[in-house]
Image 1 (spheres, helix red, strand yellow):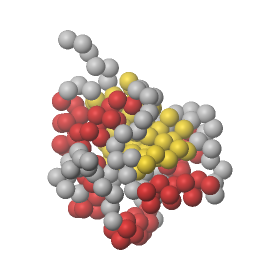
Image 2 (tube, one colour):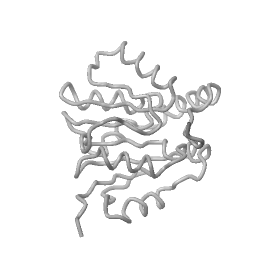
Image 3 (cartoon, rainbow, N blue to C red):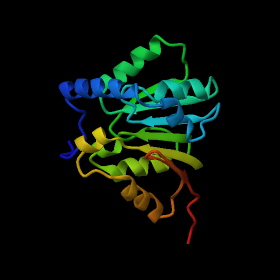
Length: 193
């Protein structure tokens, strides 16, 4: 067993986070947040750290029947909530994944990754970024956002500037848009030298 393996947050912390997120949701324009990246009908989306599904369900509606949303979270409670909400909806294009990082998705399968309010909570940030880079298509988009709560709770937080530097340093990504703290990166074709 790995010593530093990521663990889901305890039940009480999850309940508190859920309460705070549901309150803050009323002051967010989630449709604008998920649309800023240029979501299209037929896209394949990875909602990495899907939590309560605030991005999952609006994205599933936008991608339609020909698209798919993979909702990944480390917390079994979050995945259970996604599955229960999905049972009560008409969506046939949502797949829940319980994992701390590995997606088991094919290389270059995903058009858009939402990494909203998740990265500060992750122990091995580089492992997550490497997995995202692996599954994201060339020209695909990574939408990153980190609100105050996730940065306050997270350890060794990676702010937007550090993330920009990290992603652009090896020429795998370039920042294409920034609005209200939301960063949109495009995956580049890695050049052989």
